[in-house]
Image (cartoon, rainbow, N blue to C red; front, top):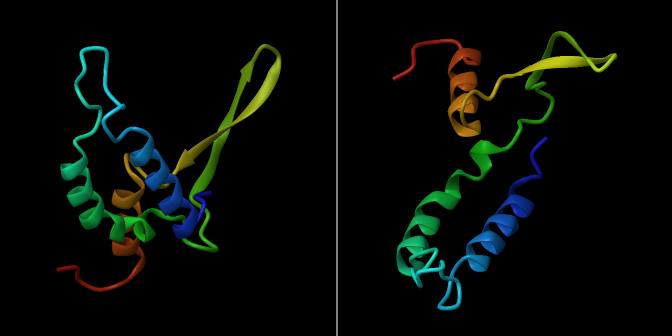
Length: 102
């Protein structure tokens, strides 16, 4: 399960801060993150944090079978998210809510 909007926001801010700034450079001296560009991207994209959260009460994992590894039976699951949480959740909404999508 995802961690919720406040915790996900905090973790993303911490990540951006960790890799930003003058001292955060690769071995050739190139900044890991362009701080001004990242500020613009963060301002535009943070509104989507709520979209990538697991919706309450909806199981996003379906057991599809089992595998045996080293004598241990392990469950196999399929995740409803798809390649990205945002993409899959919006697809789920589109399928879940009846009517025409526009």
